[in-house]
Every structure is written in structure tokens, then in C-alpha cells.
Length: 252
Ligand SMILES: [Zn+2]
Image (cartoon, rainbow, N blue to C red):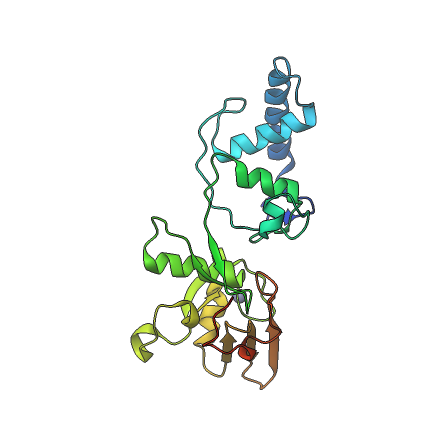
């Protein structure tokens, strides 16, 4: 019996809660559940602050992350891009926070992440006219890596109109090829494209275009059908069209 349909799936739900599930041969799934359950029941003897469901969930996560269940270990810091307006950060507002790649989260949860001692803060500077990030604060990242991160935060997913692949799992594509066309490594010449669509861009007959300032992208297939899309900016732009502003007027 090959169990060819076995798989692991991840679905992001509301309230910053996601579901990870695995389709496995029944004997393997039963054995895995029994192990998680037994460890949770053992922890329950000395931990009354969590119910059995919560303990099983925590044990499950600890096992997958390589932690000893029930033992507090220093965690490797995950870089979470939390987009939140300053008034939300200061508890003056309860809306507008979102996690990169997941979506809107409750403000209280966003503040909890923000104030966690293990969290790393990255300042995301946004152009007030376009609402798009233009730079990240100083860090140990090398310049090219910083540009890559700015592009990930800005575009959030593969720029091909129908593709939802998160930018962090995409290739960093130079719109104008660096070697062949002299394209620069800069935010204005970069776009996340998943591996498949990166290859598609260079395949004969396909015409792709991406305008990072307006967030518009289009793909024309070899049969001449054009698909277009426009992604939302990270923050709402103050001006409806970034071209409206006069560049020599100070932004204050
Ligand atoms: Zn894609």
C-alpha cells in the first residue's frame, strides 16, 4: 500500500491561528497521536495552567521544532514582519496590524509580539505618498540582503497575477537581468517570483511586466491572453496617485 496521498498542509485562519495537518497511513498517525497524547498527559500532572488540548498542541509543536516538550529552551528568533500603524502600537487604535504572509491579526496579539523580549524590531520606512516600504533600519544584513527583505515586505507574494506564493519562498528576480542587461540590484528593479514563474518569465512567448511603484503586474501568455493584477500597498497612500506629488516639495 503506497499511501500516495500522504501530505502535510498548512492553513492560516483568523486570530493569528493556523492549522498544520498531516495525511498519513493510519497506523503512523495513530502512533504519532498516542505519543503526543501520552507526553501531554504526563505534563498535565505538573501543569494545571493548560488543559489537555492545549498541552497536546504545545507538545506537537515542540516535537516538530526540535524542543524538549515541557522544557523551556532559548528559541531561535524568527524574523516576523509585523506591519502596524504607530497608533496601534501605542494602544490608541485596535486595527491595522498584520503579519507578513499571514494577514490581519488582533492588535493585542501584535503588541504581544512587538514587546516580546526575543522579538527583533526592524524599522520599515514607508514612503507616505505611496505607502510602500522603501528601506529597513540598520541591521547586520548586507545591503543586497536588505534590499531583498524590503522587496519581500513590499510585494509579499510572487508578482504573477494569479500566484499567491509568499515572497519569502520566491526567487529574488532582477527585472532587468543583472548580467545581460546591466540591471541594478535595487528595490525598483526587483520582484519576488516563485521558481516556476521565474522560469516562465524567461520562456519564449511570455511577456511579463511589474511596476513596483504602483504595484501593478501583467502577464501575457503565448496565446496573447493578458492577465493583470494590482497589490495593496503596505500602508494606505496619502495621495491617490504617487505621480501627483511634486518631487521637490518637502514631505512635511
Ligand atoms: Zn508564482
